[in-house]
Length: 256
Image 1: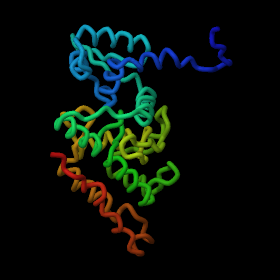
Image 2: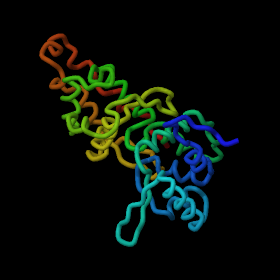
Image 3: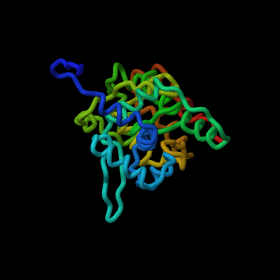
Image 4: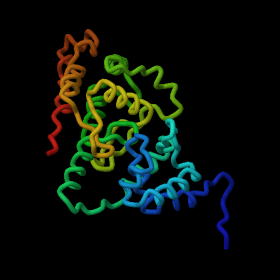
């Protein structure tokens, strides 16, 4: 007997079937870092031939889970949007992790746990620490940016008013699948992460999705969160202007 759907139900089976294939799942996971990758690179990362990867990419394109970007004769693939990334992140949280079988994989796992991009926002211990600092410092309250939060983010180069116009949730909490605690997601998380990368405070790692805190980032974050300009005159007089040194954001353990 065929399934009987109630009006406005979604037919999730075709999408679930696309993701369920191990090779397509590996391709989608590789694209979770937010960067567009060529078919050859995706073939290598998923452990299949170029022809096999191309066939899977064709199905993912038809299913609207990925987009293709053309630059001259080259084609690069990326996730079709943040909604796809959110689905993959939720699946990662409820899935078991594959066993680590080599020292190389162990190092990669530690880098991903330390700092990575969750599609277009900062995740891992670094992302959780950033979110904690924003909340504990009173820069973000109930998923809304406060006045001093706007001053903080303006110092980073984030236009909060402009971010509010994005067609996605503004500043939701995103449960981190390695830390099991929240990091900053949504349009604001993407804008903050974009600013951190643009300033060179974080840089992309050779490990897919992983990012690395730079010396400039360590100094910049410490200065940003200790700036008296972030606080009102009353807070400054009460001595709270120097209560956030940024240490929690800049004391990441080096991965060797």
